[in-house]
Image (tube, rainbow, N blue to C red; front, side):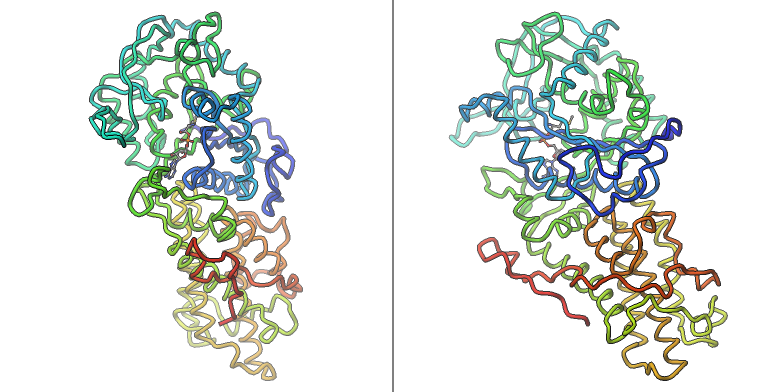
Length: 586
Ligand code: ME8
């Protein structure tokens, strides 16, 4: 695996370059450092966004924010895929000009991302001129290498998937009117037989180079089950790939350079968006050499077979990692308009809050396998983990009744002496030492899970530590201690100091997932913007006899509950939405 290029350090503005990017509290982290480039897919501009689209976007956003916290100069591209037959048909069906139609749909994606705190630095539409230039250059490079030739393609094509299929990938089904049709076995979408003169790419030439790449880079596709799936796919024949359509059938796309009778295949066009964002065909190396793609499992073949083959053909480096996620189902079924079970991400992020939806998707979404979505589950998870556990802990430990001076309290090493051997000397008990140990190990655990995009495991670990910290506070019942008694007071302050230090860890580590909640939490603890990065974590220095910059610092202003409890009626579509009530300190 290549490491991100360390040359040409460049300071990015604190806020991402995209005019559509919404302001985000965690952007104040310095954007200097080695380069990192993450991409989400460009989404088809044929219909409104659904929950699955938000999932791809939030996953990529989490990686981007995490890398920034680690000091990387990270760039994050996202946008809309606007060419091809599928879009042409959707615009025709709506009786609209395709570009106007795409502008509308693309705007809906953009607004969803702004609302959901997706901190992309680049928003790309494949109908932009800069992208057309990139595609034309990419095509001519492949052609000049002798990798594109004129031929006849004959086979199955799915317009919904914009994909060519081998006979073994096609099966029989009945359409809604009971007519026998051929469908893709993978997606269930209808396929049609097509026979056409067009351009083909010499994909077959790349089979062994692709295998070499994968075998030499076991981390190139993650998680491992998808890596294995690509290896498996490369064991079979890899026929040459049709990379254009006759203009008479597909007029909505980029014409083949030098042959206006042909339109470039939409997947070749769409994949090049990643290069366009990196600056191609102009200076692009410094971003391209650290490219990471986040994709859903249905578009794996395009990204892990076609795309690397195109890149090899064009003499360009391959992506560092292709991060794959699985899908959300509803009631155990694929989301689909005909089943009427499509989940609207904008409406849900209004109902459950932006951070609530971000947290739920990343907490319950397991990359390795499909997960079932339900509103009831959202309410349950968010109430338990964000409102009661995390919010309750912050409430308790900053409550004026326990902390009348409203400062970060002092730590007393006589009350909580270092090392378990000191057990009987202070007031801390064995479970307290276990809790400290768990929180001390938390950053490296979270780091490992963020890096592999198993974010649910990172959140599981944080949530376990929050529970342990609540247990710690509960065990020592600080509200029963007498502030007038010197020993009690020192112990009370120590309990609160330890709990706030734990909360500072959680707030910092959760920034990539719930930026707004983390911001509120860290602001309440008076943690300055420059103290919110990974290197600033430095948990509980007083325990090791080192100075703590927070001790004695006035807390930030009280800004209400961290996350308002959701009434279970918010899980019911048919009931009124504004039924939140603040959580009580427990
Ligand atoms: O495929 N759960 O665009 P797209 C989770 N334009 N994720 C889901 C999902 C679900 N139920 N359904 C879809 C395209 N997705 C191409 C991409 S990139 C060069 C071109 C995810 O609008 C899906 O897995 O169909 C993919 O990551 C994204 O939505 C693409 O959506």
